[in-house]
Length: 324
Image (cartoon, rainbow, N blue to C red):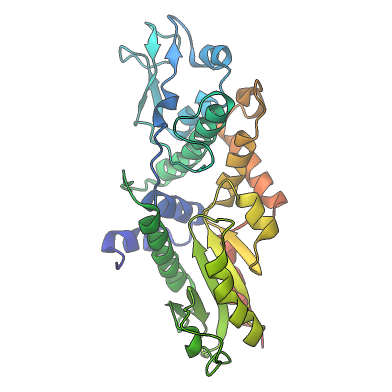
């Protein structure tokens, strides 16, 4: 399905801002979590958010949401500048809607698994919301979107982003039959397979082959089937991948069979990993007392893993065009 004019306009508007592009693509491909209500923690009478955080031994810090632009209210609707006027659940404005990022922890999980999943989801929501709020990005997140639809939308958004980011005259082509690639043509063992995305410069040179994966799985048979003939007959062409994978992001950086991998939001993935790995009983608030500290943790973690963003993908492709 072609991209809507609204989606194209969002990409065009924030083309030079890599954090905003991350927020736009994630927002449009939103995977609604069934556990968004985890932020509605129960407060005792006169209890502050900080006191509740310590009492409940939360794996996340309500200050992250406040720093991102959320306002907390007690159960009678009074803003929580101090202690709650009455006992009951916290209510947030805007409503807290987290993205499901971890398929390894079920919606019915309990104990430490539940703590890990919900805390990491809230961490990424806070980082995403801060970018959306500070840039004034107006984006409608879907409530229900199947995995296949999400993956196709991510691919189409990625293609449009690259088309708008690469030099004039370059082409970003999708599902090109492998037999239409010079070097693979007239090969009896290529078959009817197609590429995911091909990058072609203004001189009609094949610069790179790119795979788009919203999530990354251990079963990579289809991908390997595409790579075998390409690496056999066109070893000069690099094969890269762009993904939005969270729980396997570290594995993507270490083990992916592609020459290079790029992430939709490496800093947020780094923060997700750090919060997700927080040991039981450890205070997230002591580790990262505000959203700035969490953001820096995510950036540092991504840098340690050499997990690069889409802006680096664009830079690498442009540099490839200068190679003779």
